[in-house]
Length: 139
Image 1 (tube, rainbow, N blue to C red):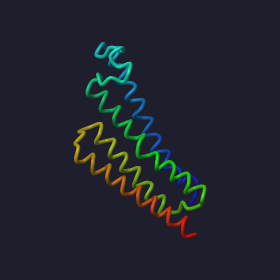
Image 2: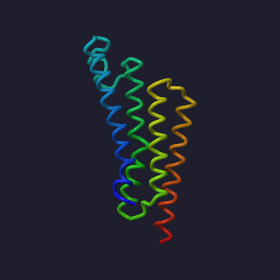
Image 3: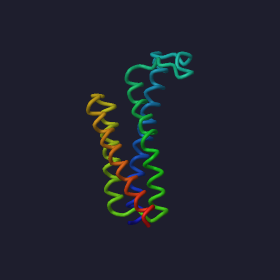
Image 4: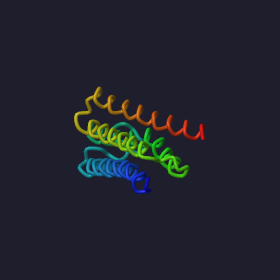
């Protein structure tokens, strides 16, 4: 597989993470400017942000947890030359599920839908890691 094909899902995941970061930052700065939140009330990560600011910030934080295993796997798969078509398809499935998870998180925040997207992403990522591990250990 080409480096572009392997890294494109990773780039989309990074873009999602950065978009949520900037959105959360914008909401927080706006809340402070409008006087909805005083800086001293949140300076030490106290949970005094409004609902919307918290919702988007939590969606951002979720993109820093599970995806780290995706980033590491993508780099390992590329450097060990184990990134093939199956890897790229599964990578897109994972990123698609992360996009769905973030969408649900910042819209309805329906817990069972959000959990489905999260759990499905975990399963896809676990399959990706299992395939990679087997290929490395068997070769």
